[in-house]
Figure 1 (cartoon, rainbow, N blue to C red):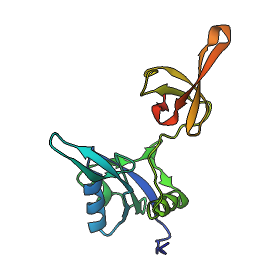
Figure 2 (figure 1 turned 90 degrees about the vertical axis):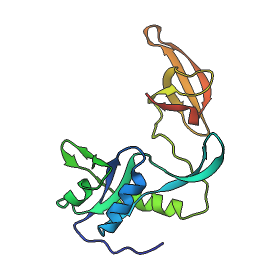
Figure 3 (figure 1 turned 60 degrees about the vertical axis):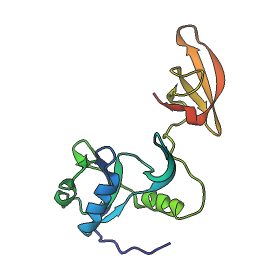
Length: 170
């Protein structure tokens, strides 16, 4: 892994971009001398006449940059930037280890895919397959998810196994 020199008063932030502007934003940030990171994955794209593998953002709509929180204007002036992700009016830093973990993963030859951050106990909606549109509680997550459909009023339910890729947080 590469050693990176980091200014002591900087942190990683998520930059929310306009649709399909992630690469443009990353390039502008790098031209401004900022440490920008855009994790990507190779995907097949289909047009009417052909299929081709293209680099696609791992987290569509987001790019990451290491900045000083008091110096956000150069980021916000980039074409395609919507905002810096914030909570309660304050831009929210991302722990270094989260960015470094993703950076380390994409530098390997391992196969990886984006997945929604869902946890056991959350309400999820089935988005593909014969149960599309069904909402239930996620009981177990792994290569398959166990989904519990319930009638709360009578305290009864039924569980079914679905592919984890077919559910999203509700």
